[in-house]
Length: 346
Image (cartoon, rainbow, N blue to C red):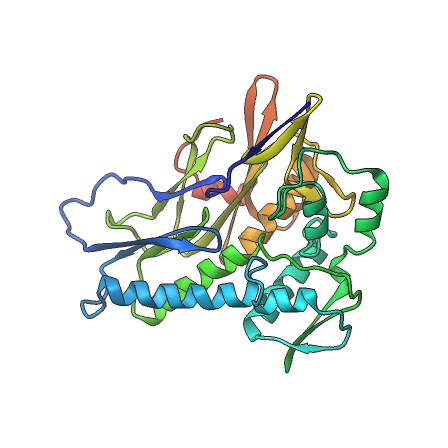
């Protein structure tokens, strides 16, 4: 008997600025935008935008930027640059946009850093376990099926060239999915767009991945709620404050299924071909860029509470781990994360 929970809204960070304590009477103009992109939603808060920049103009600029990224990196758009690359059987170099090359280059760096825990070629395994675009039912794949898919998984099977920008497959059956890094990249791109328009104080959120710069309307660092990793509810578990940093959270409780009492998460270990089975419920990562935070959060989620924490601590990474126990949740955070905590819950 199997039951499945599939919730496709923003994953595991409460990506809204929390109320501050006030600013002693100072008045600031706050402009807010919301919209849809990449199969999820976005939210943007801008403090004191230039007077010549109105809401409609900014919305058009943002939507244009995001639409261009979708056409480059979406696997849901059949004619996107990435979809065409996935369909191709060529193993020769294929010209690519600088943006796609940049993201694939970053993905490779994170893959190497994490020993393959992060791997953008894992999509066929995600599909096999029923967590891809098409629902395949609650079934456990056979060892033979997993073995067959693993033969065409591996970040080393993709090559990237920056000048001139191009990519190629070493295996014609390789399939790339950037869903664990593209939203973070999109956040960074929107942030750069805002700064190019003279905006210095903003919070950008796409599907739960965020980047904040400057102070909020209360002249404080942007405050962000980290969600309690429990299915069926949304409440704040911890609060952080950020300024000129990106934030990403990965968790196992929005998309999973139960089979004979066993929990199967949508987080697939690319090295084993199977869902992770450890007790890590969610992990939040803070880095200067949201693209790196996005990828690292996924990698640490694959590695689990022990190996993931060890890697984050060794690399000086600001990371917050929420571990599921029989008595509830236990938090672990690296030393680099401490300066971002506002509350001090244990």
